[in-house]
Image (cartoon, rainbow, N blue to C red):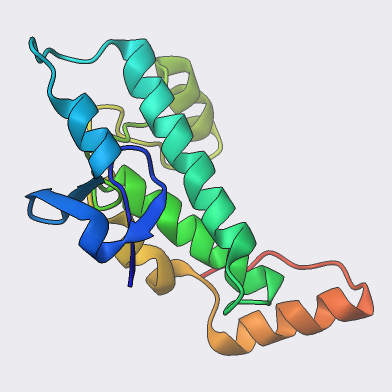
Length: 160
């Protein structure tokens, strides 16, 4: 059975992995590198690199995933994996706060048109991957989308 290293994100046989805590496993090579003499808070650049590398790993996984040949299903899997990363449930990554970045001008503009605006103080992340199917297309809508793609029709936006 293959398991992904939570540090380098490569796949290894499960018996070649070292469990650090809970579901955080590393390969033997990364385990040697973990032994930092002075652990510290990561810099912004290091955190950005970790996140981007992890997202590329997820993309590669879904690109190579042979049990899911349909493009729509691969893209839905990729979306789920990205949201799982932001929620802090993927590859040893921490959760990320997702806070709308609005301005007073944005809110006033939307208000003029009778539309609501986003709370710029509230973290909307945390369990987004669990909400994915609630707000996504039904199986019937997915089948219509797939059918219209094969016929070359334009896809229509799905509102729920």
